[in-house]
Image (cartoon, rainbow over all chains, first blue to last red; front, side, top):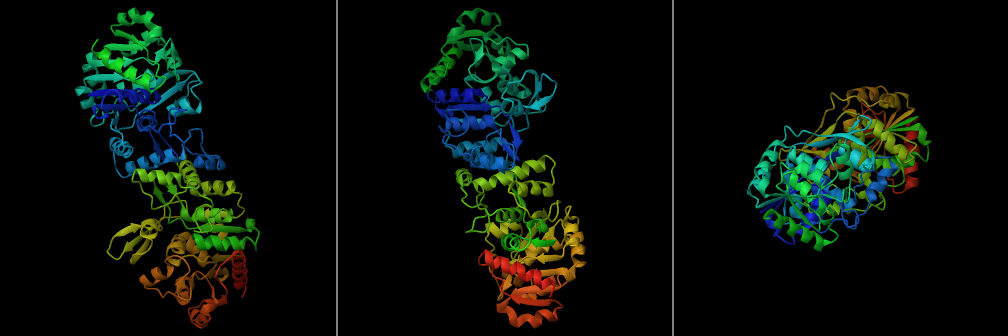
Length: 309
Length: 309
């Protein structure tokens, strides 16, 4: 059994490599839900959906999120009203949010609805939200205003400086059913190459999840999303710097050292291996850029081998 | 100024005739909202939307509701999940529900959102929900179960016997801003040819609306939706019978006699004029089938003249 701590696009790509290496039924993905929000009355879970659509082979290959061959009729019509269209919801994708919202209103749990959705897509991987309880990433901008994650990430295209990030609801959150077992029973726990602050951070902010992870530190392998001091996608490097971390594999090692005994990072950062080791984290170097499905599978193999190194 | 009490399809057709006869800016449509419901987390107002789309010239001419040239991508995708698809929401139509839901969540009132929506469609008629407060028609079926209106009307296609209808929330509801003024100041109040029980009934169930209407009885003209003992569309005849009313223009006159001094009904029922008069309601006979826009305009003229008869 393999347990993967997952954010959105980077984690989804890693998982699409992992299912080429390990039977999907042996994989549990524990997914960030602190980016979730309600818009137009709809319960939207971006990371759960990105993981689901990617594992279904239906993700838009251009963007890494949303559905392949999507149409945008509703969004175009919403423009007539001057409605909120900066968060793009495609016509096919909308069905996921309608379904989730209705089922939650009927009393279903988020993990229950997620199981229904992944089952409808025929996905073998067990995809689980880290918690069924509300978890919300709030971002303080340089001007002191605190905004929702999606306001920062999508509406402002993470082009604004950030002075703080907090995960509201984390202290009172509890792991969703299956999460602690997946972590506890996994042969290897993999921290996917997701944003350490806003994707993995919220998972670790849930107290019982953090405790379960600390107990498995020796079997936990993190994969650095920072390559040569930069994030391939998204604001991980900038966010790390703005919050006082070093935007490097050493900075990633520091963030993850209580959690993961091993850090996999790219060959381009091989010269930082000793500095990573000095943080008490075993460095494992290799190619980590998931440029195609073969590269994603190779990274999955590298991560699983790293656990035994 | 003309004030029209409106349900859905029949009222919308009448209004599309009325705007050929009276300047749209001189018309206020007070619309039933007791069919409104929440599905998939979305605030759906079927009668408001039918009136709006019809006055915009964009209603689906086949069905009389929904939008012309609609696509159904989201509904087709919702089927994958086994979601609720018996209430069909087209891709363009969905934008209206998304917009309304978001604005209500932001604190807007239903009448405020309705004004925004009708303005976006360039509609000159003032379209007002009868109340901003929740009003819900509940239908008791013959087996004793009480169901939401849409469950009866759409899901069961009004093919089941009904033993009672009530409008939850009516006693504590208040007219939306503008409603009492529109009734009080109208030269003529027209009760559109809508279902007397489930479309007009909820408007009259709101206490301050009922009081305002009673004060204008002499200037109120109702149009019978029953022609030759039958409703042209929908379950008005069947519902009237099941609830102990006579499914005829005489039955309609009895339901409306406290409200309207005049009843316009079709030539085919001319032999019932004396029976209508015996109910204390002035009978006005003419062609009432709105087979095309000209016929709808002619009915509007007939109704306005009837007020002066």
